[in-house]
Length: 464
Image (cartoon, rainbow, N blue to C red; front, side, top):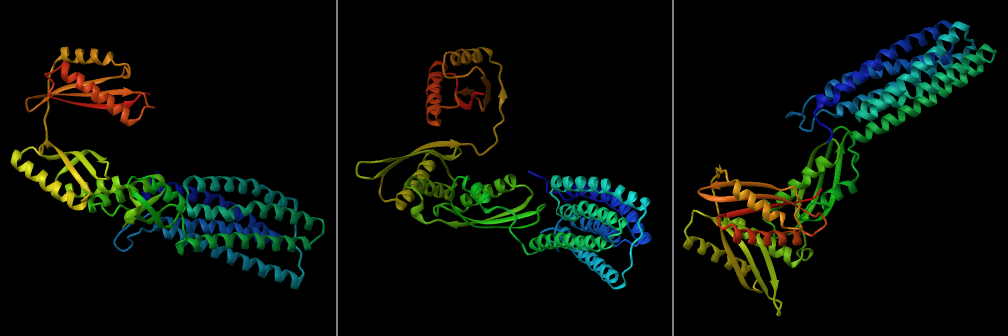
């Protein structure tokens, strides 16, 4: 994901603006000096356009200095919109330049004076063209690479320099041939180009300030639906700038979910949104209950049982729901209870859990819970050197056709019990159910052949 740290993001933008500022100031001095000496309106117009470029660079630097500040209590969403305000000011400068050029055109029409063009003037003006080409290429590429609103706004009207300078050179050629009216026409064309650039900049800046959507809702919806537990996604909104995006959306989940489970779903949607969409600073998910009929029977039972278990401070896994001939349910699962309690206390907790479950689903005729103790303390294993056991395990695994050669074995003791951790690789195309069945079969064989093992955990990964 693109970094959202203001200092890291704006530092290269500031360097680009400084480089472009130096180049624009050089071109501006040449053009305005030539225009003042010769009286060529088109040259003066182009000079003012380059002056606006320089002024916009200064505005951009000032805006970046403000925008790179980190969010605080006064500006909890950050200062990024100062960059948008800088782009808005650049658009205003373009309009001011248009007015200045129009005044000169009107004065030329009323007084009828003609510019004075020399070979030196023509050559110096032509020399600025490749400089403009380099500025446009450099700033446009940097704006796209850095995804900077201020650089893209500056590049929008800097790009018009190519057309403006080419037009001015043509107008100077026309004046040289005695066609003074060409200068007025070209100057008017420059005004149109500048107005067009100003309109685009002002339109983009106004959209950002008015919180126009900056992210495709379909992209957000696709990310949210990929999160397990999400039933429906709607009311997706986004705002901000291209460098700092804020997203909020509404997500419906199973109504049987506990608060903790629903919060976990929301957190996962937020995490995937921030990682899946560039420059997302914050994503807020509003959780709503879905209609009950939108969930399957198994999902309603599973979420409901986990809700009961969470409320009692228990855990559960290996849940299976069987349907009888009369449509009744037979449920079996492993119920996790603290290993510190007595068998009587554990049995009482299990009975209470089963009674609550039957209260939710009267059609449940049988609930069988396998009591599994869990430790409430950290386990500190002690390494054991048992190369003979590892060799025997390796030999047993070599006899399995479905197990890859890349095998990791770890033998250790915890509280006097011998534990074995295995990491195996199997064919990636088999189903999870098939892989689980193979692992359970393998564990039964190992327990029978190696009775000294007290507990075994096998992790399965796909072969490369």
